[in-house]
Image (tube, rainbow, N blue to C red; front, side, top):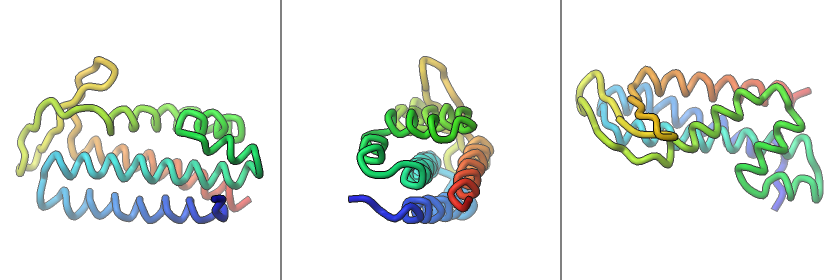
Length: 152
């Protein structure tokens, strides 16, 4: 089923609103690793939807069907259509790995410096509220870039 090009992009914007609420309301008051995981999941969903919107804008017919085959294929087609998104695509791939990574440790839950300790590509990582806010800004920048390109 092929959607109108703005539908996935609108979904991406809605996911960002949900992620924003999780960061600035839920995380502020609950301060749990579960909320950090939810934010990361929302950011991946928003990024994926924005990519679908960009691909639907750039490709039609069989090319579109091929482009929407899966995350790896989507990123390849997106790079062909928008070469300037290379850095964003690398970040998306990192976020997907982070989203699937196991939580090794939960530090300072219910406190100001809540930290999710995880491992991505054999590298131990401490994910804090500030880290999640930075990820949010990066995904938001990508969505804005796609929005500008779709409107042209």
